[in-house]
Length: 248
Length: 320
Ligand SMILES: Cc1cc2nc3c(=O)[nH]c(=O)nc-3n(C[C@H](O)[C@H](O)[C@H](O)COP(=O)(O)OP(=O)(O)OC[C@H]3O[C@@H](n4cnc5c(N)ncnc54)[C@H](O)[C@@H]3O)c2cc1C
Picture 1 (cartoon, rainbow over the protein chains, first blue to last red):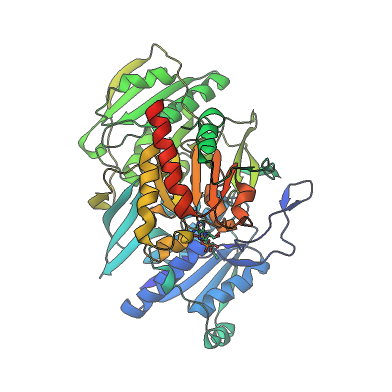
Picture 2: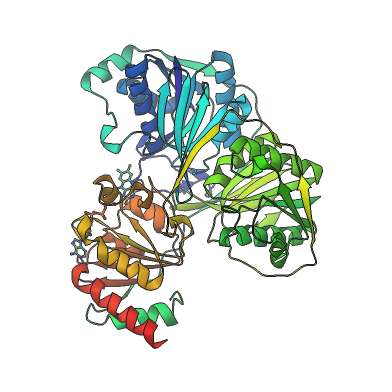
């Protein structure tokens, strides 16, 4: 079985977000980058499937050379090899086109992507890749079991969950629940050593348009100071929620 | 040209998010000088109500295959209708199902996709939309030159806007695509307000010490008709179900009111809740970072403050 896990290279969740070039570009100077947390759930799930069912696990990123440490980290967690498609990840359409072309050329039984990337929060790439490759797609996946070439998958729905069945190949947009937080793998010393010797293949991007352009970024306006209310006068809060906030 | 809105229904019934999507599409259509065509599938509610929110044409799509959601079948359906109606703008709700199929519709119709939309475009040519990025830490203005666009509208953001039209309402049959996915079962929490649509939310953190103390959270929630949420460690420790976990790795919500009790306000927590319109923080530590993101704050022990608050709300409700 061949499994692909797409890895997005994103600012650590505690990063302060600033912009440069007249707010047209994200300022990445001084920012620590990590594997997109949703992708970590996917990678761990892929490792578990490799152990239980036997598989090769490839990790892929569309990005410039600066994303390679993130791919190396995924190799240290246990992926067998890595592919970097050499291009700036300009918009979700462009990225999806690159990933879909790689899948069409290589062929995978299962492709995992994080439900959403923590930087642009579009949640668009997984569904686009599925449509471009004409493959069954489960979004917001919180459970997956494999029985031969049949997969039983659980997805989140508004106010509950739905269990689905599909034959492989399948494209899965994963999140917490696909594996539990406590089961997430972190690189071991041995893993880090081994990762240095694993293949990280750099391949050129295919031609594709971008559908979106960033005009500029903007930071939210700071909130007005918080109104403090005495714990002995909760009636004042009720009054404010009614008269000022008009929510009760 | 026209604006097509897919109006989601839940077991046949419309909800606020349904009317919000129509309101959005109708106003956008008006800005563009186009028709607003609303479609929905196998509704049990009267579909002509969609005209109250500005739809100029309403099509009720009937067919056994359209009774339950399937991403491939629904994405194909919406793309087919858009082609038939010459719609170059497609609006869906940014709900679980909407987010699921929107990227598929965008590829099928060779359209640009913008998810998490909060408001009408800031400009129509080129189409420019402001949306959140970096988990609520910033906004971006995206523009597109694409001739078609799919917009996914965040529930509880644009609001419902009544504007009655004399819409033409018709039943319509459409062919269904095939799908490799089959649904085995659906499992829904009953009797609770699902978090993404809750307008008022009461949320508890590790400061509540243990699951046995959630009675007071639920009592407060039922006193004002709110949904309940929690911080990540609370879900991780199994005190509360994962479906209540809000924040960067959980649900992102934007209710009218968010009351955070015993939650420190870590940056990853704020990522999922800072878009709430009013935030109340109850925390025993005056230095808790959450107060910086709050509108109203009480420094105090939750075990004393919350019961008093419940009593005050009940008294207020009884008097009004
Ligand atoms: C990659 C990543 C992703 C994450 N994603 C999320 C996420 O999605 N959502 C999320 O919530 N967290 C997330 N976190 C965790 C986050 O960093 C915090 O650890 C978490 O939000 C803390 O939860 P808490 O506020 O409930 O607990 P604590 O930080 O322990 O805070 C408890 C608070 O309760 C107060 N308190 C204690 N006793 C009382 C009392 N009697 N009365 C009133 N107040 C009291 C304390 O003063 C304190 O402020 C993430 C972390 C990482 C690294």
